[in-house]
Length: 297
Image 1 (cartoon, rainbow, N blue to C red):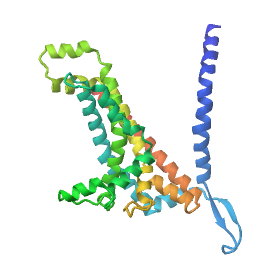
Image 2 (tube, one colour):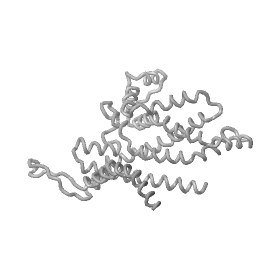
Image 3 (cartoon, rainbow, N blue to C red):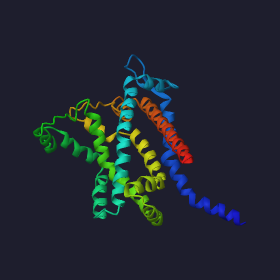
Image 4 (cartoon, helix red, strand yellow):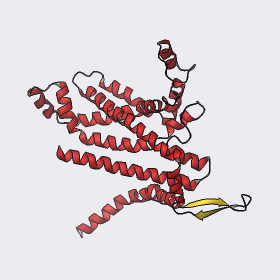
């Protein structure tokens, strides 16, 4: 009887979550999979109407066979290799500095570093487009007056430009996560390390960082997933800036272009499913790798 009541209570409490999860996640994914198996064709040499026909895996082979789609994954690889280490190391260093005994005005710096995250991504991208544009940007003018010439919209500068925008948005947010984890560490452990003669850096690297490893893994996992969804920042750079960022620069942009510029919803759905599978695979790799490393530690 008691077990039945517990089961019924759990079902009542978890029911709204599963309903929302089904409506917001399962059904859209199922619809995307279904949509990816069909394509629209015109009859009568283009003069007739369009009809939706079953195409099987043709949309998937078309996406994988498209050089632009494959190059988008190359861009994501370079972005991840550049962005993720900078974000994790930068946020961790800032959190350790704020948690140190020498830190002053902690609340002020927490708020100052977190504020960029409060700015919507599209607004942040527009701000940085202004700061990247020659003849408009005080930053570019200052760099040129110092003898530093760098084209943020060039093929070589496009990736660092997008990475910089993403860092500006997310560095403070992840720093707050690390700082909160550091604050949860038992202070007696740190005091014992100090008594044993460990300096500030030794305490930070040998005591604090291992103790917040779970938070580092969580941030790394979410950052990998978020990096694969790169869309807003390059889309803004693509619109009217003369940037080297093309309309198919990332897989997300490829799917967006296929759907809303070419009206090929089957191809867009197939590209989205392939990107989702890539994200799931990388998430699995990250969790397995960090899990094995944690067991060895």
